[in-house]
Image (cartoon, rainbow, N blue to C red; front, side, top):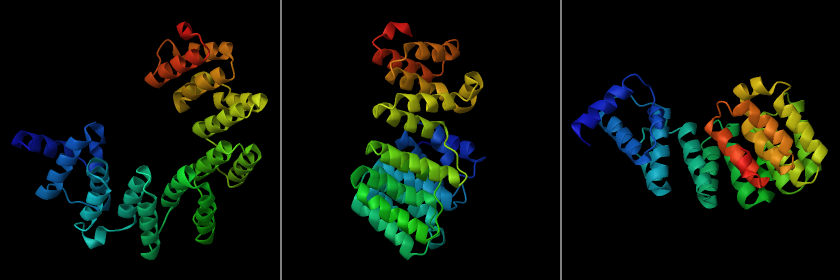
Length: 274
């Protein structure tokens, strides 16, 4: 790395306490080089989250094997839950079941304070490869008093929907609300999509109206509802609703709304409509 690049890197990071700030850049290889220089030059006092950020980069750029070797170079005092949950997330992303299970079991053996984040990673993994094992994770969470998060319920709702178990999906939603957690826009979108796929038009429409929140203009700003509403109304074959929602966006559409509109009109066979 050149001296100019090194100085630029230092000036950028001087006011940041975390390597995660480099997420502003798109080139993971460059980010990896910069973070490596930061650590080697000791321009920053690395903390556990900084090591975790570097571990995440190594996993994505150089693979899980190199990431595991890097952990050996992290001071023992920083080899905690954050480090191993970062490795776990990358194992899950790579759909490496054996390695993910090894890391999760090591976290338990080391008596790390396991949060819903790590459990959610295992739920995501088993949702993809072996849904029967989901119950094992849930039972362990209950035994260890690990409270489900919104994302936990989102995974379970989607899993039930994918299995065409609409009754089960609704039971999960009911349980979630009983714990004081309300579905967000993306969770409602998952529910609506499964209602659509199950031919439950009225239930899908009811959820879509909840997503609009009575004031689509305000809800659009706060929750980016239009992005999800456009393709869902299209799946219901409701061109008028697609047109109505698009009117809120067309004067200053966000990129994701523009893409959602193209998808919606395309599925309706009216691509010129947007």
